[in-house]
Amino acid sequence: MTAIRQHEALAQAYDGITTVVSGLDDADLQRPTRCRGWLIADLLFHVLCDAQRALVALASPVDGPADVDDVSYWRAFSAGADGGARHAWWARRSAAAFDRPSGVVRIWSDTAPAAARAAAAADPDGFVTTQGHVLRVPDLLATLTTEAVIHYLDLVVELPDAPPPAALPTRLAVATMDGLLSDDAVRPAGWDDREYLLKAAGRVPLTDRDRLELGETAGWFPLIG
Image (tube, rainbow, N blue to C red; front, side):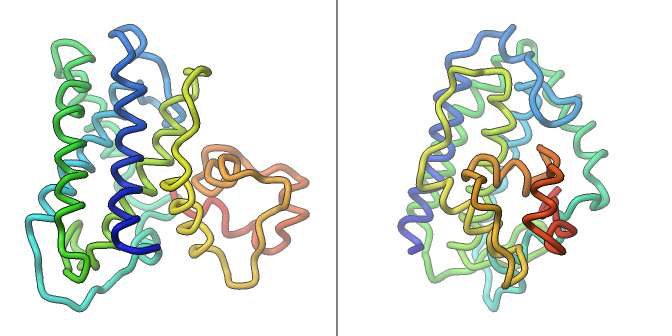
């Protein structure tokens, strides 16, 4: 996928989230998500932090080479990695500090488009730093898109009328999961992209049939935490 398509994928992923949350009132924003202990407003705050991190990273070019790419970046965030529970608690308290849940939506609606514009303007041959790593700009955008797609699926678990995430960012997220699998692994033929992403991210457990079809590869799941 070219760098141009990657910034388009990020914009589409963020636009999808904006479209959904903009139509929610304060009560809806307090519905649960797939992320344990997080309401929609809490999860949106977490993704807001990603958009803010994108703005900082894209404004902080560094010399290469990269030490991780769009796939190996995720190995530090495997299931059971340290720090997840602490961040979850911090994000929930931070979101609760807003006078109303819709306050998170207002900041998101300003920040996400700004991050997408910065991504479109960034040098696709450049390098940036984030979370202690150096990445190529296109790889940074891919990591942000993958996270946005998975969290979109988390966010809409109790919003049955919400559309699926857009095709382009979904394809990018699927490519990331494919990269995290062993070279000879093949996902079960019955999985669509949504099921693959939810199971790869540990949101939905593997069934006995999944384990039979995956064989030894089942031990790799979830691929990210």
